[in-house]
Every structure is written in C-alpha cells, then in structure tokens.
Image (cartoon, rainbow, N blue to C red):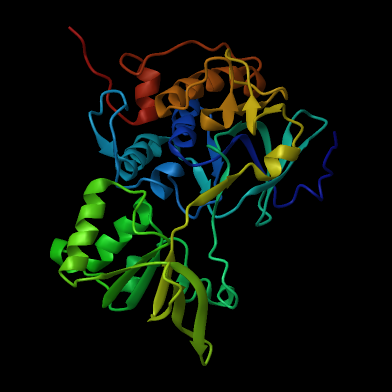
Length: 363
C-alpha cells in the first residue's frame, strides 16, 4: 500500500464510489448507491453509455426486464439514464481504468488511460465481460484510414449520408446498418447512403432471419448489393481509400469502389488491466461472495456478468439484484458510523426527496 502526498493529490477527484462500466448493471448501480445518498463517478471504455445493450443489440427486443414486457437494448439504457438522473453521477467515457492502487488510508487510487485520477473509498466493477474492442480487418495498408474512411462503429450516421458505402460483416450489427443506410429515406431518416454493398465471407448470415430476408429482398430489387468473399486488399489514390479487393470462393478478385468502409466483425471482450489488480479470478471472471458481492479485496465489489459465484446466472435482472446488495455492503466502508435503515421508495419521504418526487398522501 502507498500514501499520496499533498502535491500528488492535485488534480485527483476524491469520491466515495467509482463504477467501472456504464452498461445496464453499472447504471443501476448508480441508482442503488443514490438511494443511499452516495454519488458516483462512472468510467467506461466506450464513448457512450450502454455496454453490450448498445454495442451488440441496440434494436433487438428484450423480454425479461421485470414490469417491462418488451424494450430494445437502446430503450432500456435510455430508461435507466432517466431513472438515475436525480443522483447526478459523473460519466467519464472513452477511457479504461489502467491502475488501481490501495492507499494506506484504505482508499484506492484509480487512474484511467486518459490520465483521469480518482481517490475513492469503494470501487464497483460492472464491466460486463470486459472492455469491448472491435475485431479489426487485417488488410495491409488499411489501418491508416481508420477514423477517416474506415470505422468499426457508427458514431454519427450523417457521416455516411450520400456516400458509396461498403459494409463488412454478417451479424446483426452489419445487417441493421445496411438496412438503415439503404432504406433511410423510406423511414424518415435523412442519412441514406448513395449506394450500399454488403460483404460477408459466406452466403449466409448470423443475424435475425427477418433482417436477412429484408437484405435479400433489397438485393433482388437492386437497391443494394451483396458479395460473398474475403477482403484481401485495398487501393488508394492521393491518401484516399478508393476501393477494396474482395476474393470470392471462386478465387476471383473483385474490386469494389467506395467512399466509406464500415466493418462489423464482432467485439472482443478483454479483461484487460483488471487481471493485474490482485483479485481472485476464475475463468476470466471475478469471484465474489453472495452477501454483498465483494471481491477478495475489501472495498472492491463486482456486479453483473463480470462476477462468478455458485448458481450465477448471466441475466440483467440478476445484475440488478447484485447492485442492491453491493450498495448496502459498501455502506460500512463509506459511512462507518452511520446506521443504515432499509427504506422503500413507495413510502419514504427521504427517498422521495432524493428522487425529486412528491410524497403521496395515503388515506
């Protein structure tokens, strides 16, 4: 353990709780801590909240959220953000936690890849299956166009409007965006591409059958094009990517001209620096107790898909349950002299005040 001198403390954010991960479980952890009057800072490697819900299935229906018969991944995140708004969490996007160091006073120094530093009493790891990194298209000479003409996620759909767009991939994300950019003007979305070519290594997809049927119908109507093959090369003129080479199963190499290239080869979850923090790990998951979901290091909790314990089920609703117990488990560390009473949002005037709602009057 170490201790920071006052000079080193300059620029360090002092807080009671840091949450690693802004997926649905990380967001609900904000809520459960907020009910106990604990404000949190949230760190996520993605440039926006949502985790797997937004990265893997933003438009796919979810049916097992209590009292919500059906919602998409994006809708779930939007509702959670609305729910936690009263608690004023601070979000730090696009950065990974690179250092966790225990201090002599029991707190943790947390540092991110962008140099943001925190001194916190507790840490809640809600990193899902780890930090998501897109699987890259390994073609010689292509990397230099990344962030200019080559993208692995859609940050701003308007960037692709009116462009000759090539999409590589055969999963839900690739087909979803192909449909959106191909038929954009038909559903009121102005971000329609000039042309869309979808490329996948085989003539078959790992996506929703309904979307596959729509793709094939658009190809039959010559509204877009599909090519089965592997991207094996690229061409550039004056530092601009102008085309990619696609090698088909027939051995022929086809040159596909483009303005923009979107690649969806899946996401590779990596435990990353978490593996070096001295936590007990089993099969790339963090071992926890089931009383308060603490790891083997007091003050560090793990909730959601990142943890493992007997009977663990990787469900969002299980993660929500874990958040509640982790928040109560953290109270003796954050407020050691405070008596913690279980309050109900239905009847507690104090919780109504925190939530910014009026207390109901019961006859």
